[in-house]
Amino acid sequence: MINSAARGAVVAALTTALALLPAAAAQAEQSDKDNDIEKVVLTGVNVVDTTPEHIHTGDSWVTHLNLYTAKAKGKGKGKVAYAGDGEAECSAVRVADGEVTTQCTRVLRLKKGTLTLSDMITYRPHEPVTAKTGIIGGTGHYRSAYGDGYITLHGPHTHLKLNVDE
Image (tube, rainbow, N blue to C red):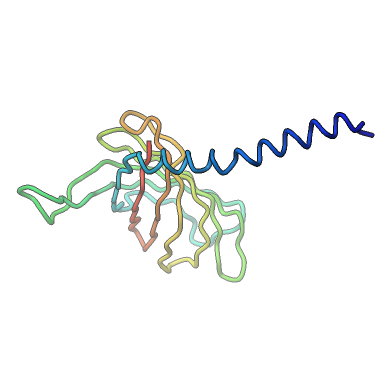
């Protein structure tokens, strides 16, 4: 049994914390507005893909891909440029009714450093799918990276639109 003095102290502490929470949330929002978010848009082309033809729960596979980005300015505007390479390691966590749910970790090796992504995607094999992905870390220029974006899987291509925050 909690005595009334202890109960009063707990209530006072919770009341103070709840009163300060909106101010702390507003401060976090303000600091996010001040940060620059780098947009990273890439297209990956599978070079190696060990995905099994018939996927079962527990199956794992690796995909290696070359990454490209569109040149936005300068002499080669409108053309694509090699941006790096990457790997995805995926595991099927659920297979049911023709759908596969996978948990994947992706490492993108770019000129400025690496980005590490994590996502869980539910899709039908051989059909395109777009899903959210999270940026969970990086190295070099991206050493304190976090954020999110979208990943679209379409046959041997992987399209990434990432919002990299630091």
